[in-house]
Length: 211
Length: 223
Image (cartoon, rainbow over all chains, first blue to last red; front, side, top):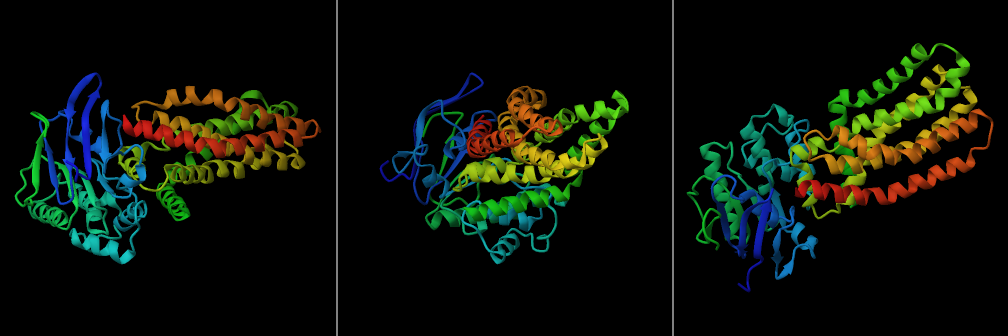
């Protein structure tokens, strides 16, 4: 486990006096793809939020290269792309403005890169449209377009396939696999079985045992 | 870092001007409250003039409070707050830009409207600069302290009343100083002391409040 980039040590999570999971040991190293699965309410989103440093664990810790993420927030945040249930897309802003802002929060992107990313998710021609006029699937795509920008190594994605059509699902699966093959890391939750998973794919079922 | 600061201001400006109703709401509230008072109290100009410092300050304070409930609400609901927290840029800087934008489009707008309303209440023209100065120094404090409460209550379903309960006691010092300085001006007393106290209060909140807001947002996002 020494080559793990991101790992959890004896992690436990409690919400509203209900223990979601405990003694959880997960490790993610470069090229890994980890799917967190389990029934509704089993703590998938909570685990992802713990890994992204958005929540504090009840016990245990999340480590990056062996050091707690709460002691080196910068190491985590400068390498992390977090895409939650809500992707941080403002309905009143256009797709381009949303992406420009979200990328400025990290490494920044030029206008050309943003247009390229929007075209990559099939939103060419929608750059100047306010997002509240787009459909749910199209709004999801605006959020996912960030994966086509100059993205950090660790992707933590909560239900990225929601509201996408079949073709977009396949495309996203391939893109995630390509990211892993280039040395990136993906942690995601989804209920949908992945068709195009890379060889390093693993599944963590929170309904059952630990990994 | 300063780049993110300006981009946040730009983003907030765009959002504000695309839903102008929110821009106008506090101003309309401010104007209505002040316009109703002469109707309720009666048109005695001496009485209205005596009441005017307190009236203007209370109305401005409530107008700011009214706009604060929604300060972080939509950012919380659409996941923007999470993105700020996981950004490598310091949350304090982002928060400061957000509150500065709130002050520009709520607090500063109230300040600009206040001379007109003050004249309606019969305040002498030569006291208007003191009024402006007092509100100019005081409204940033209202925005910043209010944002601390807004950050802590953003995760709650109906945080409005709780926000008021949390924040109103903290508003008391700035309310006393702010209306005190205008009262002193009306009575022809020196106002420099009051204004210096207000300025130091403003500096104190500008320096410390962003950290409290950032911490509050982290707690709300982490729930």
